[in-house]
Image (tube, rainbow, N blue to C red; front, top):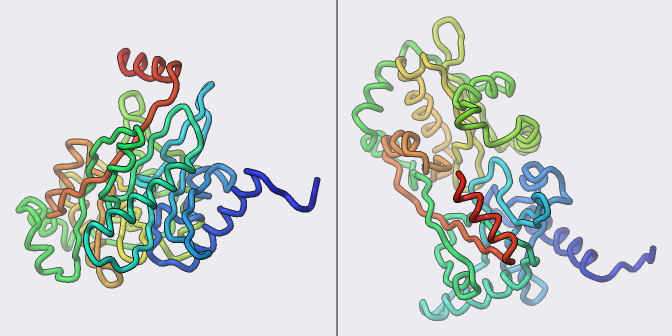
Length: 330
């Protein structure tokens, strides 16, 4: 093998090493776009890649993606435990909105041109990405999805005042009866979280191995908390797994026992999490909310509906036939 490696493989390695340096120095890159997060949720550093735009030797935009093989097809799709993987852009100052949109068109076009040819592309962009028109012009489709976000938790009195009456009543019921503790017991968290899933109807959407990989990396970087709500006997009625970047806390996972529905443990635990995390960062993202029962819970905490874009594109007649056949027989 030549010591001087050229071609697409070498270029990909060079792009990834540049991106790792960007992630280590740029605080604005969201948590779920971080290189170390992608290493964990994609099953290793060889299972994801990144498109970059550079100006004057400096990265001004990035879009990581996960490329996998499903049956005979190559696809780009979302990894486990990851709601969004967005386009990060370093914005200069603009004299007007037209200049900003022109810049975005240029940047997005360069990123899209670097996406490898696959049978199916499906990626969910961070809610910061509000301009998907360039994807549309390039033949992509868009579906609006929603998460629920408390955008400013600095005024906790105001935050509490926007809770529903039921949430406030649950908090009052749980206070004095439920104790909130921080824990490193991932097995206990997983046991509590698993109670939320009914495999025949709704299977767990992630593997415990992936959660352990995420936990190891987050714990090393002080980017996670496991919070438990314990009853008088020390039993965990409810559990939250929180992760964060420099500006936002994400309610990554949660679980509860049947007893928690009566004790108000979940409401008390979420309120504790909001108060605890508001000390260092402003926003609190409930990390989802497309399932109707979950949506009702998240908005009961006064969280605002925040849209994000699911961008997709089918290439090739064979995959299109297989895709729509699967949809038809569900």
